[in-house]
Amino acid sequence: MEDYRYGERIRKYVVEVKDVNGNWVEVNKGESVGCKRIVMFDTIGAVQMSLRITENVGVPLVRLFEAYYVEGDNKFLQFAEDKVLVKSVSTGKPAKASEYHSKPYSPNYINDGNPSTRWATNVGSDQWWVEIDLEEVTEVDQVSIVEGWGRIQDFKIECSNSEGDEWTTVFKGTTVGANYSRKFGPVEARYFRLNILKSTEEPTIWEWQLYSTNKTEGWHRCRSLKPDEIKKGECFIDASDLITTPGQYLLRLDGFGEGNSVKKVSLLYNDDAVMDAMVTRFAPGLYNINHTAATTKDYKVRIRLEFTTNIDGRHEPEVFIKRAYE
Image (cartoon, rainbow, N blue to C red; front, side, top):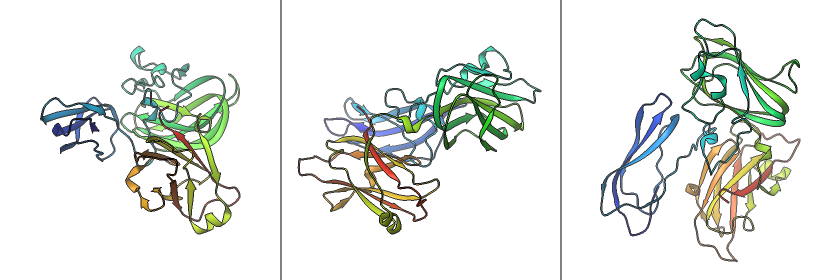
C-alpha cells in the first residue's frame, strides 16, 4: 500500500478479503501507511480484497494497493489481470466433463479465470473427470487447482494428443484442497484431463488451470551456476545491466530442483548493503525484487543466492531476470 504524496493522510485502516465462500474476513489492521507499507497475514484463498480507511487527515490518495502470495506456490496468479506473472494456457479453452450438476455448474466454469464460478457434479455420482482442450499441442509444466470443501482424496492428471487416443498419466495425487499447485514435466499435449478417483462427497472445483512457465516471454538469461559455486552453496549474480532503474523485477531460478534447495535470496547495493526486505518469494523458483533505490551509471546491483548443496550436479542451474511490468 502507498499513501501517495502530501504526507501521511491515512491514520487507521483495515484490510479485508472475501473468501471463496463469499465471507468477508479481516486479515490486517493498523495505524499509518505513509509512502509505503507492506503487511503480512496468514494465507487465505480470496476472490476480492478491500482496503477500508477508518481514520484519516484530509483526503487520502492511494497510488498502489496490491496483494501477493509470498510463501510457497502462488495459487492465484492466474486471477491477476494486467500484471500477471505466469500466464495460464488454459483460461477460456473448451472444457467438458463426465457430468455436471446443472447449467450454472457446467465444466466451462472450471477454467474461466473467475474464482467465484465452479464446476459441480451430480449427487450420487461416482465417476468424475473434467477435460480441457488447449486446441493445439502445448507445452505444460504446472497445474493449479482450487477445490471447494476439500473432498478429493485421490486423483490423477492425464494427457493425450488427439481425441480417442489412450490417456497418459502425467502424475498422481491424493488430496487437493483450496490451494493446490504442482510443477512437473514439461509435457507436450493438446488434451489434459483431471480424473478424480476417490472423493468423500461429489467433488466441486472453482478453478483448474494449466501453465507453461518455460514459455514466459521477456526473460533475460544472467548465467548458469558453476560446479564450484554449487559445492560452496552460495553465489553472486551481477544484475547491474538488467536492473537499471527503480521498479519491480522478477527473478527466475531454473534447475535448482524441488523442495527447499534455495534457502535465501538477497539484494546487494554496491556490495555493502544487504536488502532482504526487497525480495519476496512468489513461488518455487520465482522471486519479486523491489528495486527502489536511485541508480547511476556506476551503480552496482548484485543478487546473492544461498542454497543447499544437494542440487542435481548433472546440469547447471540457470538464473533469469525480467522487468515485472513493461
